[in-house]
Length: 176
Image (tube, rainbow, N blue to C red; front, top):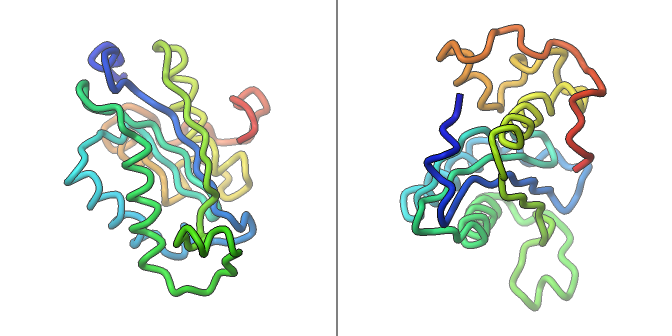
């Protein structure tokens, strides 16, 4: 399905989870256009391929393939987070530590990253991303969640429209 061999050098393929600072917020889906714009702008200056991605109200998961000569995903995420945050009205509470560092407080400072090791690892994370809206109760079937790359794979005939139609505890990669 995905050519893992192309990116074993330098940058590689990475799985990410990023969370909003306020886990009860719905900013990511409420402002999905702003998030997409921030991602597009960063991809122009610092290319990468999005192999899979899902955006939920308070967090997102992504699988990226980085260029063979560039593994600087921290820069890319920093620019995406800042670009998204700048497009939001400043309504969040910002503590002193964040104010001193000129941070908005929209995102959690840290995020989870994992370098994909092999085809099995890649497939497991690919499936995890696309099943996540069902896992969290946002949709009864993966294809019914609008903010997911699953639609690209269904259109291409790689996945059937009824892929992963119900919650099953066997899907857990780990709580993130």
